[in-house]
Amino acid sequence: MSGSGGSAQGPQTAVDLPQMTPSSPSSVVERRNRSGIISEPLSKSLKRSRTLTLSSANSANANSHSSQAGKPSVDPSQGRPPAGSVKLDRGALLSGLLDSPSGLHLAQAAELLRRAGMLMPLAGTADTAMPLGGVTGITPSDLESVAASAATDSVLGSLSDFPLLGNGFPLHPGLFIMTPAGVFLADGTFIGGGAGITATEHHQQAQSELSAVANGNGKKKRKRCGICEPCRRRVNCDQCSSCRNRKTGHQICKFRKCEELKKKASGGMEVMLPTGAPFRWFQ
DNA sequence: ATTAACGTCGTT
DNA sequence: AACGACGTTAAT
Image 1 (cartoon, chains in turn green, cyan, blue):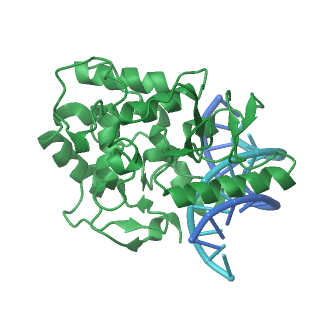
Image 2 (spheres, rainbow, N blue to C red):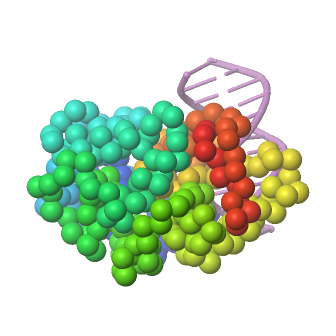
């Protein structure tokens, strides 16, 4: 369905865009494909994003929007904010943490735990502005994508993503095992996480990975991590080269290209999980 | 069958 | 190195 041709669905509010072209009409027609990916001219969602962020989260979203106001520069690296406000710095800090060059999946664990409220926000206080379902320590960029998916997907930031959280998250002294399919305890118990999919889907994913590894030569197509900022993005910009050349390029929007996949695929230490899914310690 | 997108390779 | 095209894999 040509990235740009999703069917109009749901009242979803896309708030997930790098700024690009300046404005456009007020009609908010969002096109989403089967996977829930919104592909629309940036201008629309941009506009919404503006109003939304300005009114509620003030400049928080400067994290991945902002600055260069309206300039359609297509620079994937723009997720990294320029030094700015305190809030910005915090977002940058977290973001930087997660993008650690080491590529340790520890970062992924930290991210999930952080969302679950297990980790204190780095700056620690003064930031109760966003009570997203009781989950604190949300970064501007989190808000960005959460807001984007809040209406229908509710991908992240929802307590339902952490089923055990309600009764006190089991601070398992043992292992949290991160996989593209989600987070597991060492005994194989599925905890949650992953890229906006259900536990069932997590399981299926793990299964398919298992079979792929079993009959494959290990040279399996890598999958998006699902938790990095680009992965959480739900809109195609429709303006980057990948979007423009989708027909021939077969590439995902640059703004949605998984940080993990951007890194060179190199062996690293891989461990087989109880589910059969491989887990890489290093990239 | 269709669609999305990763991997690779040639070109700039 | 970045980009574009193509083959291919995986999901629906």
